Length: 228
Length: 299
Image (cartoon, rainbow over all chains, first blue to last red):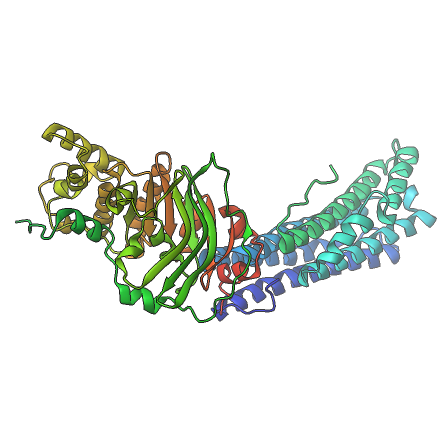
């Protein structure tokens, strides 16, 4: 609605731009983490995921900085209307991005701990895990771009298509979960397999949240838990 | 010693309660760009909920139109905030609600404004009791140059609401308590009202307004001259008074409007642009002009 107009008080625009760029940088870092995890997986590494774990500190640091910007904006600018929604929306996204980072660390630790890749993820199924990460990365990038551009159409499209139970991501994830249940419930790698699928599910949930926050930013409508 | 109140007492009381500077009003009201627009949101309430009903109100200063076809209800036991840039007509509209604009020769009000179904612009209606029913608190505290006690007792006395000292004492105490001032002044009721701090003077003016048992209290930027603590006390008071009275408040502080009101009306160049629940106005307004104003993008 009014993003084309600048605030009369120019510092407000600068502070908002700062928050926007901090969230963007945080999103890029999280996306890079997925990419890193993926490259280890594709290279067949099963023991050294330390860089993924260490990089999470960067994401945590960015979260702290962005949260401080949110607090400053709320305290100094007393935002109203769309400004308020944008700040609250970004604040929620910051939390979601940090948690995606945590899930990636969980996956990295699990893959490092597993003596071998779970059977389910061997052969074709290994590619399935990589595919899931590629899909997650694409979904995350798209959701973040929609957030940055306050692109309601894309965010709604993702919520209605790309992130539903009928989406290819969710269908593949469901297949993986079935596979884990069927073949790995009793195996030594069952625990790790369950962790992987759980984290993939959580990553998808957080991407879904990011799209919902974008809808809130633009329309003021809380669409959280609508599917529930 | 308190100065005596000169002039006809009823006239003086009405004028003091509604002292206006005609020139200021005319200067503040930019009427050059008025174009009628439809109000967004919910300006009207059901008959059951409504205390004051305003329909198609136009206000003119000479040949210049300051308010353009405004229809708006003020509900029972609600605080209605009126916001908008300087010159938008919010204070002019507020002053229509107790005919305070009558004191301005060149001002003409058209349309219908009713209090509990009674047309307040009916020629047969006496404005003095009207202004007791629809009290007013101004930007700058304006206590009478009399004692704290007399400031509060004055209205009930001239309106015949009290007949003896005991009754007057009771009304003074009750009003000062309602205004949150009793504990601070109960031991110095004979001290001049003008000797109180700005915040206390404003609460004294509120006590003075509620002493005559109004149905509606109009507040025109009541905290703009006060520090944050005094402002917080007035806002707390407004919240408490809502249980008993209908309150319409004009404020330039959007945070204040957000804190104290249940509904907010946004005025722009004499038009009522949008009226809605305060939560909605300040988080997700429907009209672009409202959005631009509350986010500081106006102009």
